[in-house]
Amino acid sequence: MTIEAIKKDESVSRVFWRFAIPSVAAMLINGLYQIIDGIFVGHYVGYAGLAGINMAWPIIATIMGFGILAGMGAGSLISMARGAGDTPQAQRVLNTTIGLLLLFSALSIPIVLFYGYELLQLQGASGDSLKHGFDYINIFSYAAPFAIMAAAMPILVRNDDSPKVATVLTILGAVLNIGLDYLYLGILGQGLQGAAIATAISQSIVVMLGLIYFFTPMAKIRITKLSIEIKSAIEICKLGSSSLMMFAYFSFVIALHNLLLMKYGSEIHVGAFAIIGYIATLYYLFAEGIASGMQPPVSYDYGNQRPERVKQTVALASKVILISGVATVILLNLFPEFFISLFAAQDEALLSATVEGLRLHLSMLFLDGFLFLASVYFMAVGKGGKALFVSMGNMLVQFPFLYLAPQWLGVTGVWLAVPLSNLALTLVVAPMLWKDLKELLLPELEMTPAAQTT
Image (tube, rainbow, N blue to C red; front, side, top):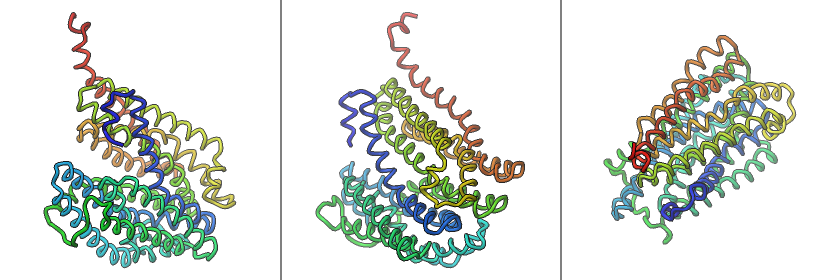
């Protein structure tokens, strides 16, 4: 999809969906790894396995964040260099990125290997949840390089003007993961060790094929040598650092929830939290896809001084995100057992805890999507300070609620902390967004004949 679709002056709705649909599809495909593991672990290992993988996930996500850092930072630099016609610079950035990925990979192995067990214990892991979590982390420690490079590879390929190849790589990895999960968990019964092996193999194949791509005639730029150019490396890390921080933040929030649920509840509640997270991920990915698809037309129309189209695009994206979010909450409240059954076999204690948590924790799910949309809007119109306020506010406002609510309400307080924080932040962000859009339209209103005669 190119910017030509916007230049043709097509309807706002048509342009929006042209960008949004591929973006949503890409987001959902990228999220399949995590969801697939959850389905197989829930059915073949049980709630202790779900608790274990949920405690392993903050460690895994943080490590993967370094791959996203390299991919996002390098992707921007490569695209800018190619846009400026500076192919040699794009080449140097690619070579440096591969070197950085190898460096991050080398550092990740000893960190996870020697500190993985303690990091699980810091989240309150004990008994079966600790055993299962360590089973996963123990395998992951050796396969961490594949996780890092698999996170970066599709981004690098996409920024080499090969979005279809990048999509094929992602789909292939997800399909392989499904088959291998069934083999190692369903047939061989290897538990979380099997889940980790399945993910490692599928990611290693994605990495191998991604590297091969950069040696083929399809590639616009190619890997020529392994080196780290300090200047390029610094720029890559600068541009990609916000992505790493987001991964680190989400990892910390998940770890904090795990700790509080173990303190005020039990392994069953952590297992329930894992299921709720998998279910919510489907909406999060959809909302992120809609917001990301909104960005190109908003940026273009803002730069082209067409504020009315900007407002219409933001309004349409907001309606889609809010209506789909409210519909999701209604469906989850009407048919909780159906959605939970996708991730767990019949277990009355787990079902009861998950139904309660799902109804409380996801009660304001639609506001998550709105807050992400607001952040993307401010980035799209070059107001990075406001975008940072929304992103940082989303992080920081949760901590007081997570600290206070469980002390007053126990496990119920843990479930309610995020929806309450989302509501509080939305009461600030919604007027801020409305005011910005209103100010955007003022110059246009002043130019109308009616305004000029007053």
